[in-house]
Length: 90
Image 1 (spheres, rainbow, N blue to C red):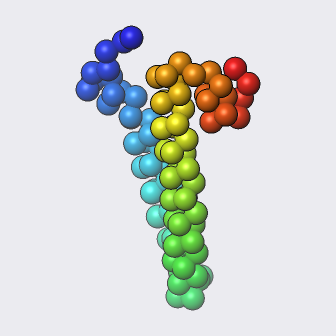
Image 2: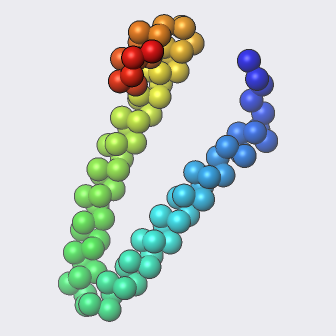
């Protein structure tokens, strides 16, 4: 198995960091555009942001849990568990 170094991990993490930066910039631009509509619109945007953040957090939690199950099954070389966790027949 290939050794995972810090340099390789950073190289793999850059696209994720870039995606997060793009999401932050999109949110900033959206808020600036909505700010032209008035205070009520900005308040509604902020309230909805809390709901969307909660939904995203829930989905990410499921994603991380599923990755853990898949990694464990792959480590055990249990193709049946991998298929159950991914929803694919292997």
